[in-house]
Length: 175
Image (tube, rainbow, N blue to C red; front, side, top):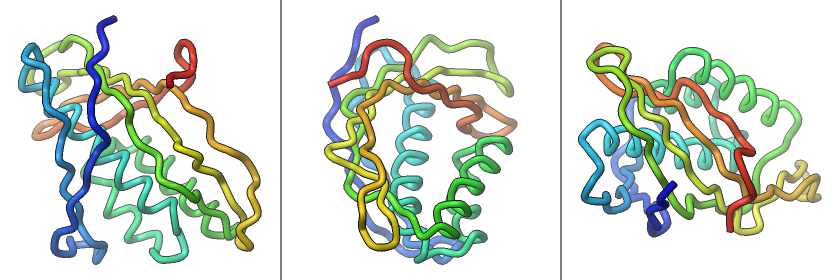
């Protein structure tokens, strides 16, 4: 599989969104000339999902569960939303958080499957943790986050693409 190298995802703060969280706009990595409109849209959803999750899980104590749900719902299908909110809730109740800033080292979309509602693009990424760790409420490191290849299943509903599935550990760890 050809891999497109991208620069780290860059976020730009904007005005707060309906959830009260500061909204961020992801400046998408430049698309390879062969990416079609659906692939580019799926990549943008994955980037937004990634940066939103990183922000929420870096300090769950700053947000309510309702705010976390509102921040994630425009990027995720129901099962992914419920799973992420459950993780957020568990981290928050345990006083845990992720310390450090991970990045997507590279991104590669698959072909487009189907069309219209139900159209699917799988987006494979290299998640580079850059020293990220899970820490307890006192800052004690509980575990280091390893580099990992992740594949996101991104499906178009009636109006937009959403992350509906995620697999980790496909192939060798990425750089």
